[in-house]
Image (tube, rainbow, N blue to C red; front, side, top):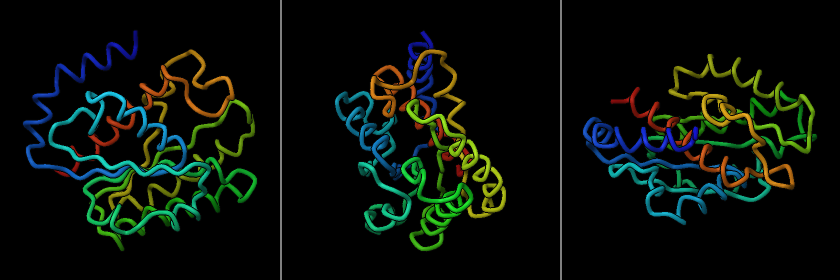
Length: 206
């Protein structure tokens, strides 16, 4: 019911959104396997491509099992260069490799590099999602550090997206039977959350 209401709302206001954001926007969505699976989800239905916005060109670059440092190596500059909006979801795979603040600093360094080196107009960082198979508070501590750091980098037009605005508004289990990746129902909710994050960033730039 929640997902249906959200999709109907998006369809209702799509003409208004396209009118407000009349120019074409270049959006890049990057990260680990959540993003890779999001890309697969988007391209299985033409209605979900480009986040259901006719004036947005969306590129998706998701890498299985990638850590923050490895994402630096995987990303080619032409993927993120001069993007209007970049949505980044990374960090969960750094569990047990680094302390929470170190992981948060690396994520912020990646985002800052996208703005200062690759001329991105706005970067959105997703908060981490704690896997069902891992009940450690490490993820909570990373998110707390990200919230602290986000206030310091706001001047660079780097924003933190709190997934509770979409993903955690539902009460049922988020994950598939393996307890790591989102199940089909919540993949739609995740797609919707990413879409609203991008729209929020576009709204600030108009």
